[in-house]
Length: 279
Image 1 (cartoon, rainbow, N blue to C red):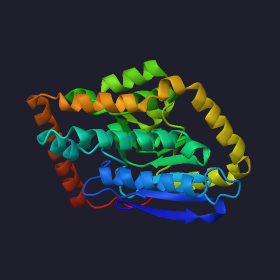
Image 2: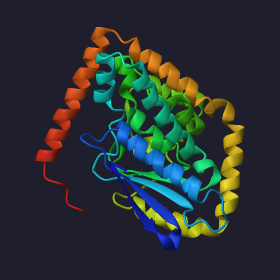
Image 3: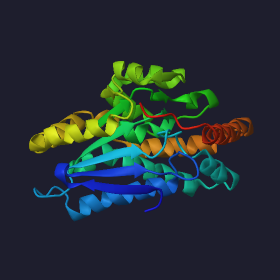
């Protein structure tokens, strides 16, 4: 399973899934496929068995950036070769991961995410699709896609599930960056914690809710059923996104190329800067 690593904490029945995308901190197709294989394996091995060894699936990032979003280099490669099938497969795999995060792997687990550093565009959605998403102070959130005539595949149903549709529209149309506190005030983050404290918060959450896990899963399923009209048709979003990408004009494609190059420059600067000391 490339671009991820796994760690199991038996005391709290928690499987940590650490995102390790290469060469950039974006949601690459190999990363998405690896996450999907973990999700499938948990459901196939244990499903909703009473004695299943995994009750919580927790996501975290390996670096100082949570995610810069979708894989622009992959999109550009598909555009160069007019690869509709490749783009649609990417969208389908991404929406499957998002759906299963939202449903707790169809009632098998509670999904959680700890966001540290920048979370941009489509890189927010797999985390926000989780049943619980927390952010460490200093994290930032933005959906800048609108500024270059683009949109994240699943942002509308994912974000509106938490903020309501009107606030989700304002966030997606603004393209602006929000602090973790601002995003929480809009309903898009469940808790803001001190820098470096996110993983311990998740451990504490798992320990204190383990005895009520079954009831929590049932409640989440009921809320998801109630929200199904706004969250359900992800395949339709995947098709709309694929069609939109393939209709991009040369000027818009050049903007994507410039953004991909800007990502390279930003990552280069970060590699040259000394890591901040822990406090």
